[in-house]
Amino acid sequence: MKLYISNFAPNPRRVTMFIAEKGITGIEPVMIDLGTNEHKSESFVAKNPLARVPALELDDGRVLTETRAICTYLEGLHPEPNLMGENFEECAFIEMADRRVELHLLLGIANCVRHTHPGLAMLEQPQFPEFGASQGEKMREHARWLDGELANRPFVAGERFTVADITAWCALEFARGLMKFKPGAEGMANLQAWRDRIAERPSAAR
Image (cartoon, rainbow, N blue to C red; front, side, top):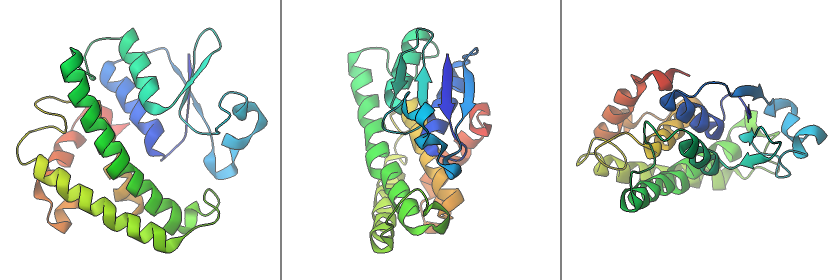
């Protein structure tokens, strides 16, 4: 299999971190340069018409896209260590937590960065700086919510590390790099402590 990814983008990083946590080997990484619009090339659009990474090309030639779908496929191939739920009930609560951080934290960060960072102008035309700034504020509202949740449990979805932690970690690292967002500096001590614990995992160094 081949995994099409790019540097710095949070969604490809979610998949590579998931793979690292699983200890999966044998998937060939293929770098796509977003800065040169390689994701819009004829050869890549033939694999993913939406021109987005990540994309997982299976051995039979089919291409699976969307981060969560790729992780679900890999979880099926490699059930252990379990990252998405042992039964339907746990699966539902993990998916809820994952979707919350994806839609309300990661998406807000992505919108803020894409519409305010000059280095992303080639990927987002036209940019709307006021919209981006408002998304940065909304993202902080959700970060404060997550900070409160982490006062009562060690991980995003409960008592153990799951795919929801991967999504939240990659979101915050993206914000740390391009928004200079550090939860502890903005009074979110629980979120900062969680971030620092996840940073110690080998998968976080990739």
